[in-house]
Amino acid sequence: MTTERITGDISRAAEIIRAGGLVAVPTETVYGLAASGLDENAVERIYEVKGRPAVKPLSLMVPGREAFSAYGRDVPRSAGVLAEAFWPGPLTIVVKADGRIPSIVLAGGDTVGLRCPASEKTLALLRTCGVPLAAPSANPSGAPSPRTAREVLDYFDGAIEAVIDGGPCGIGRESTIVDLASRPWRILRQGALPEQDIREALIGSLKVVGVTGGTGAGKTTALDALRDMGALVIDADGVYHDLCRSCAPMLAEIEGRFPGAVEDGILQRKKLGALVFSDPKALADLSAITDKYVIGAIDDMLADHAAAGGRYAAVDAINLIGTSLEDRFTALVGVLASEDVRAARLMAREGVSLEYARSRIRAQKPDAFFERNCDHILRNDGTKEDFRRACDILFKKILEE
Image 1 (spheres, helix red, strand yellow):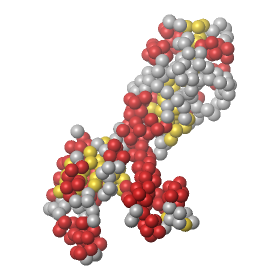
Image 2 (cartoon, rainbow, N blue to C red; image 1 turned 30 degrees about the vertical axis):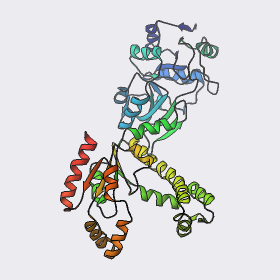
Image 3 (cartoon, rainbow, N blue to C red; image 1 turned 180 degrees about the vertical axis):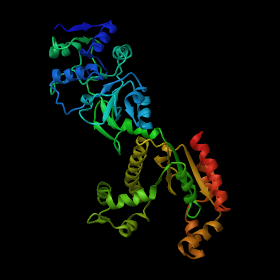
Image 4 (cartoon, rainbow, N blue to C red; image 1 turned 120 degrees about the vertical axis):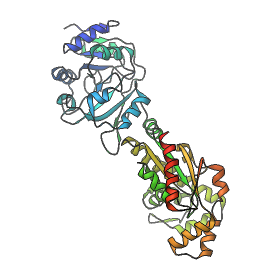
């Protein structure tokens, strides 16, 4: 067999693909060895030519987002989010596979990786031949991935029908593979696209409401309204307390800055309080340590929610204003109530005295602070029913417009 070197006539390459042949194709990462992903015999030849173990599934090259409905099932919204952000480009997105995909492509599994390459010639081939392309890297298994048509021919001249010469590949590293068919999502192969870029795209697809306000103002009712709208509700203070019990790296940093504050892996709150609460510099150092872990944990929760198909989220904390979490919010909502109302709620809820309730309230930020820094204010001085109606109206406007 003579391997053709195709430089311009993509229709010739499409003809070979439709006839069950193998064509090496350029991408922005490395050259791939392509065959019709719907032709079991052609796919079997890929395994044979590469010497690829049959237990390793193949991904499919596709021309765009429409492939999710054609070749996937139960595809989460997040797949479209990532495709919109990074396709064409070096990202393979794993979803549940449609039944029309041959078992040999899936290596006996039930998921398929879909990738839209950033190569005009390969995209033209996909559009012309009208089928997805099974296309692992165009090298014998275990050998370096080729970046030029010449390197492909060095491997497979005479063993495949053709190579499309698209010049040298720019990146020279395989695509990143992200699995959206599992919960939680995960990176199966770290390639050319950084994981942090994927995480940011997922988080950025959410509408996130920050809910803040003083003790007894009624944030719980507001958060219940958001939860009923399908929002993931995150208690930032709860996240912090969980980390204090379980996050060894954070505890190690605290112990490094404040010796004696952690004993046998357990945070000694009273000792730590004695070290920081009368020392503004020490308190700032503690906040710098804990905030990055809290925000990192919240980002993980937001990314997981988005990857599972979520659209909305809410973050609840008294101290949200001025933190880097504000960059995540579609809107920041302050829940306020008069001191008398808040004191009565605290007394009923916690059994404290009126004097203690007022002292707690007055130690917190005044209403003017929240009015100055929040995008919206919800006042909660009336009945619970009236407040819930006000929450529903505002949050519907924020989340659905």
